[in-house]
Length: 224
Image 1 (tube, rainbow, N blue to C red):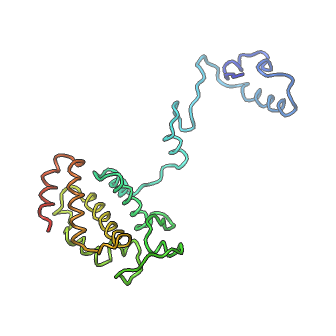
Image 2: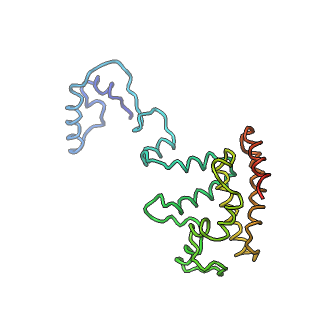
Image 3: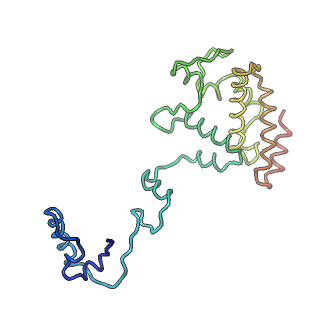
């Protein structure tokens, strides 16, 4: 039977609120309860229950935050989710960022580069690059990647107010060029990467804020 502290205190004797007889252990605990409630301040307020996070309402979010605490999150993750890119682009770049910048103590190994597959005893056919394919090499150091980035001439000053979107989509296009070569035999070409970038980026106009439309269209039209 459910019992409130208020009713238990008013019970005379207190043993009336328990099912008798009590075991030896239960009797010892009963004596402890007597000591606890012998001198609390008495009032007519109703008893109330709250969760450990000091709220009357249950939610999975509250449980999650209580379990993990309040760790500091790098601002780049907020920029990713607030961007106007499609969800698949956001998730892809979220995985990429965790690999590239090592926000955790251990390498995340989210994207299946040759470096990762090699460590799992899986091998993809080689191509022109003589350097082992890591995240940093694939998206920043490879000659194709450098050509792709140079073609869009990305600078904070010259670009519209969507630098995060530009970076995400270009990384997606570089990943697409790499996969097309490996799985479809299509030759890697930075100009084809630029064409794909412009096509995807124009679709961004349907998701971005309208006030950014003119700047985005002007920036795309000036790309080679």
